[in-house]
Each structure stands twice: as structure tokens, then as C-alpha cells.
Image (cartoon, rainbow, N blue to C red):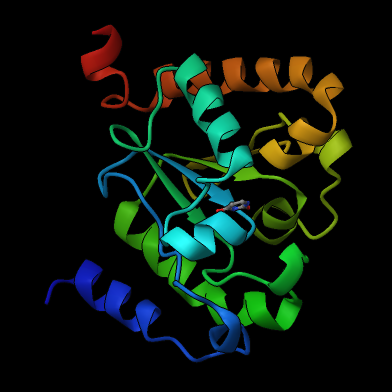
Length: 194
Ligand code: URA
């Protein structure tokens, strides 16, 4: 087994926290392993739990549209994972203890992918990955460089569904991501814009 297969199989059989008891499927992550851009969401919702794939519900459809705007797709050039790999019941925020139990899988995914850009989708991922006092309304769209990786957070697509008034700001953030990709990701737009 290669490292990816080992990691996936450990994750699929994980019993490290109580979410293992209520999950239907583990939602490991999706996208090309050589992606230069990685997106990190919060945790699976109902549709994700049923299918085993991240962001396939309503918020996921919006996410795909957002990605299309800047020539990204999960099939081609972006890897999508979540802070926790199993659904928190009733779509509550993942507890710290659940995030702590799961963070090792995300760290391993980041080490294998070695992305140049990490985009956090929403407050929960941003607070864990960028800074514990991250405020999404204040800090979305701001770049933070760490160990050669550029990090930013945007509003979670579910927040954009609840409040379409946030969409113009998110469009600006997506454009900033596109510009950063052009600057630091040599492969991402290779077969799209040449
Ligand atoms: N919301 C998330 O944060 N992740 C998913 O995979 C689906 C919805």
C-alpha cells in the first residue's frame, strides 16, 4: 500500500471519536493529489455523510459554481477536505475534542499534497488553521503566509446561501485567489488558460 492508501484506510476505519458511532460514511476528501490548491471545510453534512464525498449538498453546488468562476474544479485542480471526516449529528459545529481526534488526518493530507495555497471555507476551519481569534467577517480575504504556504479564508458557502448579501465580498476574495494562483501555482491553470 502507498502512503495515500494507508492514510485513507486508517481514516475509513477510524474510531478515534464518538462521531464514528453515528456516521454512515467517512468523508475522506476528493481531488487530484497533485493539486496546488487545497480547500478545507468544516465537516460533512447529511448528503456528504450519505455519499462519502465532501460538499455535495446545496452548499456544495454553490461551492462548485464558485470554483468554476475562477477555473477550478475538484476533478481537475483543487483538493477538497474537511476539518472532521465524519458528520456531527444535526450539523452542529464539530467539538474541539472531535477536531483534535481528526486533525492528524488533515495534517497528513496536507503533507502528501504540499499545496501552495490553502483556502479555509468558513470560520471553523479558519480558527483552527489560521488563527484561534480569526473573525470571518473581519478577516476573510486576508492572506497569511506560513512555511511557504499562502492561506486565506472565505465565507462558507452555506453562509452565502443564508445571506446572499455576502456574495460580492466573496467574489472579490475569489478574484484574489485567482491572482495568487497565477503568481504562485505554475500548474493549476496550465491546461485552462495556457
Ligand atoms: N459543509 C462542510 O463544511 N463540508 C462539507 O463537506 C459539506 C458541507
